[in-house]
Image (cartoon, rainbow, N blue to C red; front, top):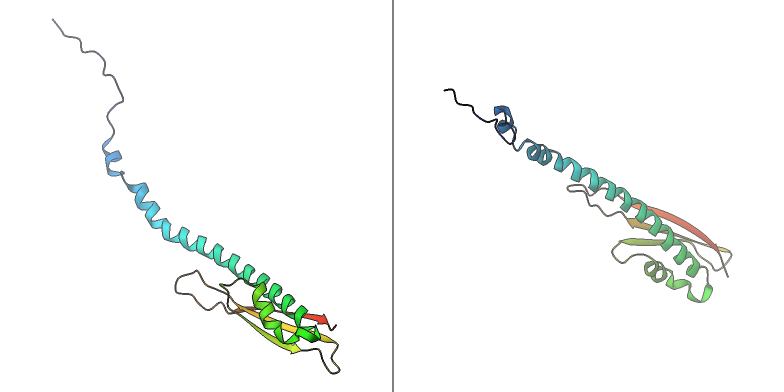
Length: 135
């Protein structure tokens, strides 16, 4: 008497090629990870460039405001440094000061652009000049 085998329950067995594909996604992700990190760091670097330019303008404006006042004109660098973030390197130059025949004070602020990209440190500095009328 012939025996009848019941149908198999559950999923069919996986093909042999499927076992060979195990871990491929992890390897692909590991290959793309450095590229994704460099792109993310480049985006952050672009933001830092914009922030340095903005801070140069803020520092120059604050320094020129103080340099345009006769009684405290010698404190323009301190006022400019107080207006800029502490972790940025900034320098100030008084291009034209009040006193004598000058009726405006012009201050230039230069902020060194920090780098977050590995092995790259040559982004230079961002400069802004501001002119204020003398008091």
